Length: 292
Image (tube, rainbow, N blue to C red; front, side, top):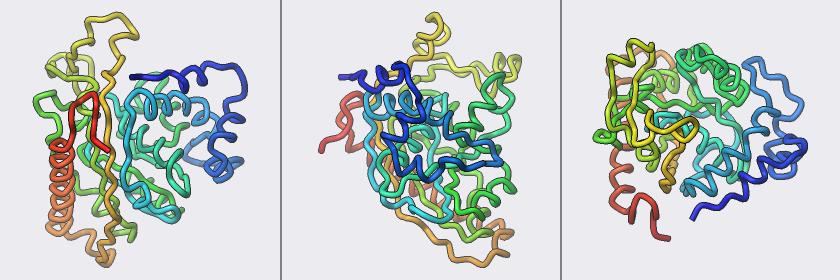
């Protein structure tokens, strides 16, 4: 059953930043007063945190395994399968890191240019911690000891139809190149739940091209119901399984070895696919989740 405690808290009057500092003192003290040249604002993150926490704890009831595998300090690259039409999976991982990691820290997800072109959304994406997806930006973040989030399926991942759910598409190898070039370890993540919150029954590619969208999904609620009901997701239970860090151990010049990079990208892709398949076998049902 969905509870509404966190959502009610989000609607209470008061200073969101002070409330955030009480709930997450370690995360707050880590980033309070810092200037970020990529545009992250702790005040904006704090404003939206109750809504993210409602989704994580109350609505999707996300279960995260292996959170300790994400390094508490130093650079690392988290990479995983992508899903959900709207990239809620990144927000759920960010909440896990903020609320449940022994050394809470932000995840700087690399976002494709398309998101920054949406009116009113570009600033919000930046202020909540995301960064435009370029190799240069990623290297700068890693050189500063940041945790970089990558979804190597890209927009293809979130645009999958319901029939294609949980089929991991070929990973773009850029994240492997980045790991070899910088020495940052890779942390694979398998997520189950996101592919079913917006069952994408049909992708109208012609309309998507006309609207200059990466895809145009038809779901049981979109575009049939009025706004905002058309965007309410199904309360599917989620599982996020975080694998142990992988130190590739190659010298930086190997980042230009295309065969090597592609092979490693495929190995990580297949490993995540196998883990997703296992989690799906162990799941009792879409809305009740897993035992234990």
